[in-house]
Amino acid sequence: MKVLVYCAQKGGVGKTTLAASTGVYAAQQGLRVCMIEMDRQASLAEWYADRRKLGKDEPDFVLIDNAAKLRPVLAALAKEFDIVIVDTKGEDSAFTSAAIGAADFCVLPTRPLGVDLKACLPTVRSILLAEKPFAFVLNQAPSRSKRVEDTQNALAALGVVFSTIMVARLDHADAVATGYGVTEFRPDSLAAHELRALWLEIADKLKTSGTAHVKAA
Image (cartoon, rainbow, N blue to C red):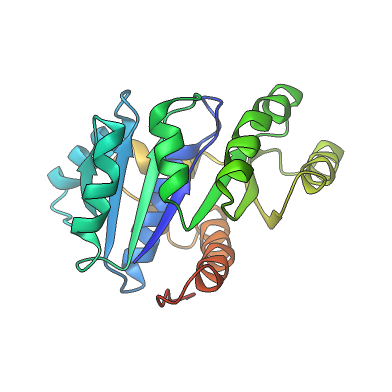
């Protein structure tokens, strides 16, 4: 079982939206997926509740209200799931530290804004201290702007940057707001195409972080 953590010590960068759609797409690929909510705001829990109303039972879901519970929960899930995707709160907390410590790979979403670049530094330090592999993904980006290239270059000085750019498209938010992942909400949309491309990059990194098999497509 692999543990994928979405983390950024900055709110509003799209962790929950990306985590939800990633979990749905991984399940669509035949993986046994469990989502873990470690944010007391519980946005992912609300998404899961909406999803259950739609009659959808994948991915599975666990809410953790105490950072110390994460390791025992992961141990209990290990034989049942191929991948666990953890959504964390946008702050430096025991929850975020526990998630990073348990991760096989961390994804750091950031927007092409100076304030987001500065805010990602504590997260990077925490990940480096825990000696965990990670990559940035540029999220909620304009479709055409030199700022995107400049931000990619700035992030590259700090670590690996995924080549997939998640453009600010309403389909991402609309899908998650109604209990869907974007690849099932509008499967032929540009947003869905971007999510699939992001998953290919994530899956490739997960394959190199250990021995468990994670399908790339």
